[in-house]
Amino acid sequence: MNSIWTVIKFTYMSRFRIKSFQVMSLILLILISLLIHLPSIIQQFSSDEATKIGIFGTKQEAVSAKLEAFYNNQPNAEIQIVPLTDQGSTEANEVFGKQQIADKKIKGYLEFTDGKQGGFPKMIYKSTGTSEKNKLQTALQLIKTDMVLQGAGLPDAIKTDIQTPVSLETVQISTSDQAAEGKTESQMRLSYILVYILLFMLYMGAIGFGNLVATEITAEKSTRVMELLITSVSPLKQMFGKIIGICLLALSQIAALIVVAALNIQLSDASAIKELNISWSDLELSLIVYFLIFYLLGFFIYATIFAAVGSLVSRTEDVGPAIMPVTYVIVAAFMIAIFGLNHPNAPFVATMSFVPFFSPMIMFLRIGMSSPPFWQVALSILIQLLSIGAMAWLAAKIYRTGVLMYGKRPTLKELRKAMRAYR
Image (cartoon, rainbow, N blue to C red; front, side):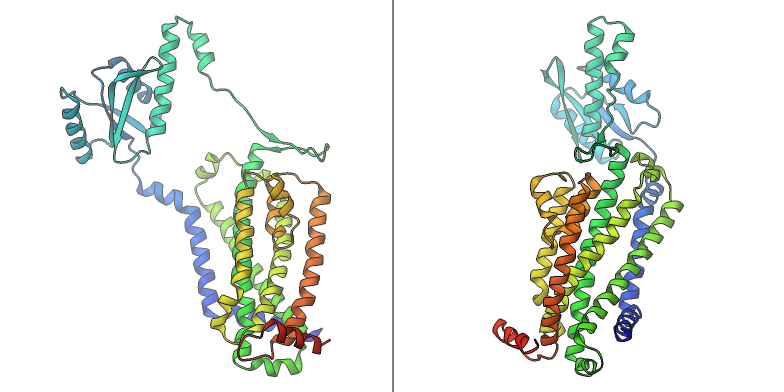
């Protein structure tokens, strides 16, 4: 037992002390800090002035006046309407409007056409970009509604009732557990953000640190260090010592990222969080616990495969092509999980949550975005534990055989023959 702890400690410390790991971890911490403070940084360098939109309103002075008044009556309006003098023709208006945009006096301009749609004049918005289109369309829709109601001669109280938006809150319920409380909209929004971030961490951890397991083993083979290690530590203890050591390294990096992210969120401007309408009190601690469970399950099931593959190659430059099929499986699991963010209860997603190579990401996604029955979660964990046991048994046999096989990559026939010799 002491020998496996020696391998764990040696693997962890040797990789932790490598400058490339320290530099990359530092870069990740800096990037996380910058991303959290990015809205505040952009706000510091951006102008508080409203976007100026010109309008040729001679044909429809009433609509033009109402649109201008709509934005003038809004506190901190994002758009300011600038009346433009009609130049007498559509062609002349276009030349004048383009010149106003070129001189940076306006961002774009609205022009009325001769046509109508639904009793309201058709308009064209011309600009170098179209980011303001939806905002202008919403404002014009409200103006159209107001003009129609005004033409109908309705009292102001009734007009106000009609124009007041409908309030609709959503609560996600569980049909499998009648006693379970539903998730509020705030909880669902927070779960979506956390699940997306944690899925990405699972994906990067499986690929990055799984690749590190294979590279670590291959590097020792290429320098013939393995021949010395094999005499003092059994191959099985070596394999699991390296896997556990690198897993602890990954968890250390994740812990550092979480601590730095939490500190930066506390120090940053909270306006962005308020705009998302989320509350940290809605954070479910069970989601963090499940992340740790499925992260460890996913890491071990992939790391055992990476360790077995790494033991079969003798040069570090051959590691990439050798582990490519495993990488494709991880990418497929991640893509299915991204699809499942908006369809967590789809039959295909639910089925894949029980497949060992996919379940670490997809069952975790289902837990965060829906409320699967506990028996399904427990069954998924049990299947993964059994799969890890089976993969560990197979990987250990491949590892014992592969670590002492040098030169070209062994064929399946050669590998099977060597594995039988170790029974």
